[in-house]
Amino acid sequence: MSSALLQLSGPTDLQEIADRVIHQDFREACPLLPRSFADLLILDPPYNLTKNFNGRVFRAQEAEEYTSWFESMLATVLPSLRPNASVYVCSDWRTSTLVFPVLDRHLHVRNRITWEREKGRGAKANWKNNTEDIWFCTLSDSYTFNVDAVKLKRRVLAPYRHEDGRPKDWDESANGDYRLTHPSNLWSDITIPFWSMPENTDHPTQKPEKLIAKLILASSNPDDFVFDPFLGSGTSAVVARKLQRRYCGIELDWEYCCWALKRLEAARTDADIQGYSDGVFWERNSLKDQKLLRAKAPTTQELELFDV
Ligand SMILES: C[S@@+](CC[C@H](N)C(=O)[O-])C[C@H]1O[C@@H](n2cnc3c(N)ncnc32)[C@H](O)[C@@H]1O
Image 1 (cartoon, rainbow, N blue to C red):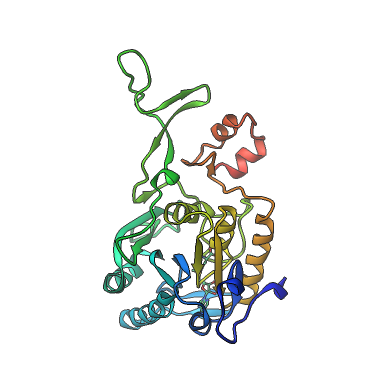
Image 2 (cartoon, rainbow, N blue to C red):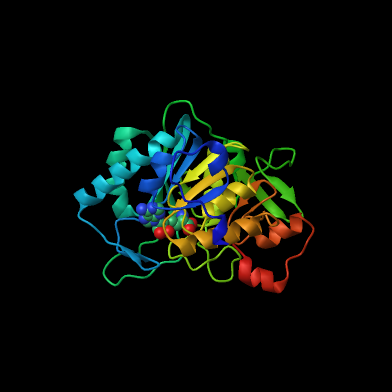
């Protein structure tokens, strides 16, 4: 598949980079991209942790060193953004403390989303680290936020009714009682890709499609341009394609680029995003109800494997 990869040697235009994966160091590729083309930037850089990305080890650094790496990276990617663009930055709790002051200097920081990883290694003398952050920033006060596109479908625990018996703020159906709730900055409905999920690859820090779908649906519109200079296994590009957005991704590792291309090819015929169906995000362990709603009972195997 690698013949479909792009490597830049001179200035490019939008047509050349639309819906493409660039196999290159972002520091080399970014200055060659058109200016002000992206509506949404998804930044999932190496965190300040020692991590092996297919043989290239990113080493944890002193705080000042990581901060200056992060700031120079941000300065390299920001010229690609349109004035009304949004920026999401992923990090772990410790890296977050370094990332925030830099973002605060260059952007309008609007929120910090914390999502529960669900899986995590227990610690003997500390609390298990089970969360990650995503900083939500914009370039200006004018930006896209489609709140109705990212509502969460939750089971109703206290089914209050009006005096005449009608459900209050929730829907009653043979498949269960649900309420559509406004999305908060605490996400506990995400499952990280595991071996039995179709989206899973061997990338060590792959993000869930459902998580990226929330960012893309909230902060872009169909046909907008999603830019990801640390593409990894291709999650943001795949979700952009599934949601009819354009994309451009950069990734240093050749094999990861090929995994991204493979996933992008599959996304041409299968636009499913696990945990997102019928235009809403469902809480965890609701696959049975999602299928019932579509009048298609899940198989026992599906329930065991994919109930996220
Ligand atoms: C945290 S991972 C991104 C994972 C991605 N979000 C996904 O869902 O698969 C960071 C990625 O940045 C890539 N990377 C590191 N340094 C880079 C550089 N200088 N230029 C481009 N990519 C780089 C790594 O190879 C790694 O795949």
